[in-house]
Image 1 (cartoon, rainbow, N blue to C red):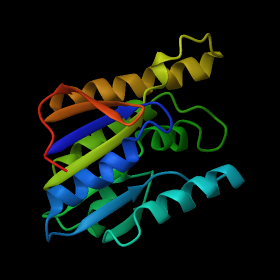
Image 2 (tube, rainbow, N blue to C red; image 1 turned 30 degrees about the vertical axis):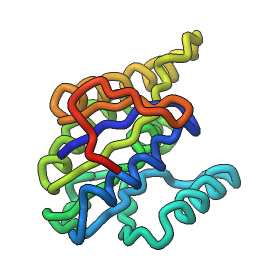
Image 3 (tube, rainbow, N blue to C red; image 1 turned 45 degrees about the vertical axis):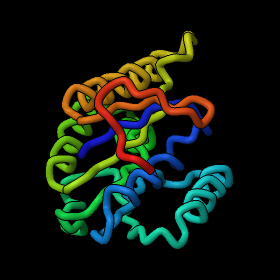
Image 4 (cartoon, one colour; image 1 turned 90 degrees about the vertical axis):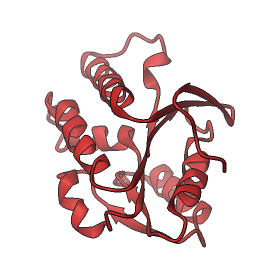
Length: 179
């Protein structure tokens, strides 16, 4: 099963994703695919919180933002992958050295679809930054548009699409397993 979870910051996406991964994996391996490289104390605190939240849940962490299919060597194909997050992955890939990479969104889409087809279950988490209604600087607009395009492509192929708001799921496509 492939699930896309979208929503704003602190909406409950990661918590639901962890519960879904536990429900789907059963006794099979469970992977937390981390894509964020910490750049400041806030990032490090966020990572510590996520690690603490999943403590004791049996996740093996895979850290990779680039060459996503290369990470498949670390994954049992019968396992469940929690990919957290598309948002951070795009940030890492679009601005790797401060120079914008306009192809990053298309690259991630193809690579993430390959990964999703190579494991038994995949839950992908993404922030819905396109709801802001803000006028952003040019490359931020490109980033937000690319993020929406990645999610649109995944949503068309994935089994379930769920939007989280204030800890409440709103299912747009398919069904979620009981957690």
